[in-house]
Image 1 (cartoon, rainbow, N blue to C red):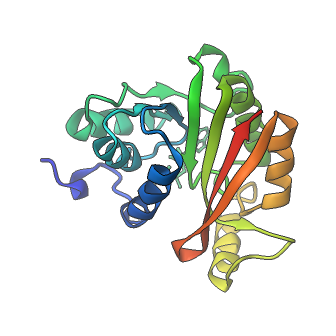
Image 2 (image 1 turned 30 degrees about the vertical axis):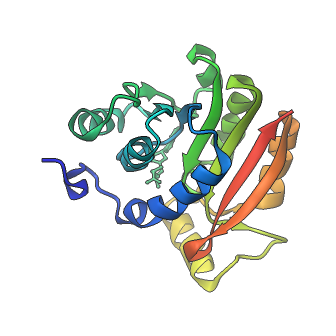
Length: 204
Ligand SMILES: C[S@@+](CC[C@H](N)C(=O)[O-])C[C@H]1O[C@@H](n2cnc3c(N)ncnc32)[C@H](O)[C@@H]1O
């Protein structure tokens, strides 16, 4: 079975946003970068981007509980430029110490799920694992100047916090401050469909 709907844990949102994200990646990347993805989920983004950009070298990752599902999907649908997925759990403060240096760290729809401690751990690890001039690309909803960018995002934030009080849509200014703290400078902030952003930082 090769159709996208056959991904275990298939994400309809991931199927919708993969095309606009790929268009942005094509405009930003050389196309042959070594990439670490954090919170790969079902692996749909990894497969879509790596099929379109066959010179990318993509290392997907997940927490231990989700890793078997990701492994199964990549065995069924993966391509040659996707490495076997590895364990990355942001609850471990030194998660990046066992990983090779990469030119790009990519993560989609994770910051509003994970706790603030894990957000901090993500930036600390990214600062360590990125090569000089490497980039961090984060996709998802963010707040600016203490405001949501849409009513739908405000409702989504309430839903997230009812589910888990440690979750919630993050403030861009706080995220950018963490980035600057590990030597990353904002390169671009692209507004994406459905009130999401694609944030790109470059390591100085
Ligand atoms: C909403 S899903 C996004 C999945 C995928 N990136 C996408 O866009 O479809 C959030 C992901 O964050 C991962 N995650 C949650 N806690 C994490 C942690 N402590 N470390 C790394 N990933 C984590 C989850 O396992 C999940 O795959």
